Length: 280
Image 1 (spheres, rainbow, N blue to C red):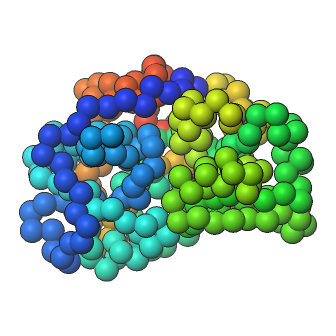
Image 2 (cartoon, rainbow, N blue to C red):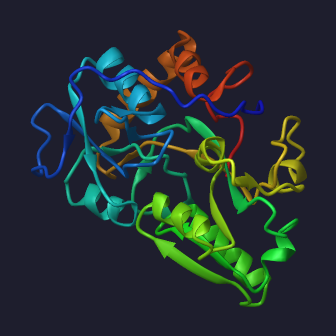
């Protein structure tokens, strides 16, 4: 696993891509993709309203490029996204979703396509220099995410001496940090790093963490609470389509498409296999 270079966060508009506010239970030939938007750099809108992001480009490469299928993104709250999938509101989930044992009881996942870490975003000059400094403080997270789960684990570690404020969307958690309503945001590394790149008042908390303890050769230079992998989620009875998507995902890794998209958002993809070298 290589260390990501953060972050360019740019992308071209996806021709013909739309976001559906509501959808019927049937796909009707169009692959509907449930996604929590905005979640930059994975799925977000440009100033002109175009939907772009790493997941968006990977979806184009898989569904349009390899499977020759039309597709559209359906904006969905992350904390209800799995029930919405299982209710037939869309065909798959692509929303920077970590593969977990609990989620795998409700959905099936594709092969992993991205490695991520839970990290701690803080204000510069906040006096927070290590994880212990968060004891007795408030942290902001997004509902239903592994960031929220990591915060809950930290609260147990602190014997309950931590307040967790959960928000519907990650921009609200970032706003809480900026307004001094929270001492930190616990969230995926790439999303925290993207926000830090655009806001010089915040930074990622440094320290030796889960990636370093695992012995990862190129562990990130900041504290990692977890090591995780993202997957595309499917309903339990959609095995044939999941196999098709896995084959398409393997193809775009082999032909260089994955590395090209990865490099556009995260820098050099040299040495990566799209998150398949680790598990979490």
